[in-house]
Length: 347
Image (tube, rainbow, N blue to C red; front, side, top):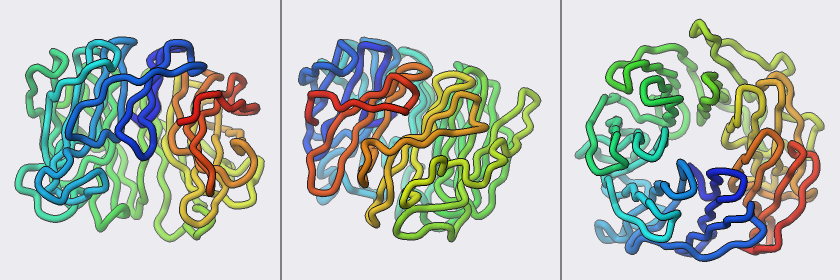
């Protein structure tokens, strides 16, 4: 789930930055119209299984008093919403101290991690409960409890899934990748990554990848030392990028900060790069060989920050970007991130 998402080549949704508004397109991003928005919430991410059925997460405003969209405390409540009409209307289907991450398998099967009840402090210091619905959010079952925070969760289907849990202070600690084949009832440890910063997990076409960063490798202009691992069919994880500077080909002025790892199939993947607060170089990375080699594009040239990316197929994607002292923009590539064109709609 993301502030920008596409269910297919034509139907997409965008949470407009800085305002409570959801827009949708039915022509691949050339034109947009205002969709519905649930009251009393600041939505942060949205995802659709098809052109009608979607889910969105966000903070409940002032619940309790003083909580808002920037809330990080476990005392502040968040919620998961469902739409069955393409985003025109929304209904709350799950609420808790922190509802995230969420994995949408299809219109009926969804997994959501929720901070354990009565957690004190920040949500990354709490354990997480994994919940599942098989009827589109009408009823939920608590499948499994993690003693540490669930950082990411992805299900390939209703039975097989992967999650990352992170133990440590803040965003740095020991990351563990776990695997299930029974719909989340039981989990087995598959990969332990000590000293990990913000691990990113992705599952597509029966393949799984994880990108992580060792602690202490960052500066104001970006981070270095990213490592990408892939899971084999036998359940073994191994580093697949033999080039230590795989994320910097061609090398930008500043490395920037890599974000989400997204694959549309077993071969074609995308990674966002943001400028951060220190003026790093933003852009998009693309691979067509399963993550062994990557091409990096600056989108467009000149210090841009890529807030969100929505891949549509192996070569087409739309990004939400921004730059210093300029309005946000939407841009689209049709050739695997080599060339970009801004869309007319201004978010």
